[in-house]
Image 1 (cartoon, rainbow, N blue to C red):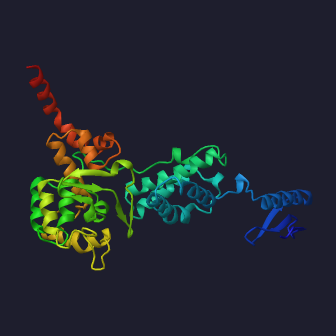
Image 2: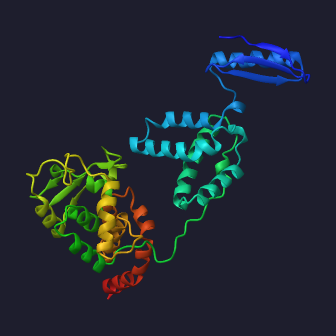
Image 3: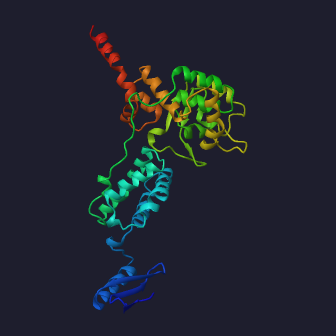
Length: 352
């Protein structure tokens, strides 16, 4: 490896030139020859030791280090999500910037640009969460003194009063009537009656169904053509099947109860984007449902229906596979807040 050289430029400055580990030439400029020689010695030592001074670490280098650290501590799906956010939303705008020069204003500007490009506030918040975790690790390693993400201004999420848009019981019943006998009927039934996520519904196999007990086991999810264990332990659950779901399963039972519940012609599971394109969009139109309705909102409708039927919050939380009832409470607070009269009536009944 080249030991480099020092020479005087025409403008009077001294330049230290050396070859980095990646084969590229690096140049350091100083006012005097002794300072240039000293800078060269330090740079060569850092190169040979594999050490990069904190002042020269870029955001890209920190992103690489963080991704390497988390790959064995999070699920593969979570890792790919974080990697995607970094690749598409963090590297292009700020990756080459020196870590020590990154400010909260830089991040606030980044969030504003992402919003102007059409990203949802919730997506921008995921970008913020990712860079905040990366910078927190940089602080721990003492590459920077403070985390600039702490004071960056986040976009507001529009939480309108009234809660999440969901299907009314009448709309849900109409939807199930429209899809009765359809190839994807079971996907809709499981969304409406069990609140399954689309990846959970499409990842089900016949071996997950216990007809004698009337239950179904959720133990995998489908994402980008591959199945994974659910994100959290609580997402693995055994659910009692309502009669309407059992009936749909029996109607679907035409292939000897083997393989995927909803297979493609090749025997592989149907991918969520294909279900959305070929079934969800045309079915919404046929059922005359709001264009903004997503499959995930069937899950919200299921939760709201259960809560309105006075099913205890911990039971609903377990049904949905939430890691904590507090998550259920926050998500469906608009439903719970309408139950004060029920609570008051309960006290009156108990003490009368």
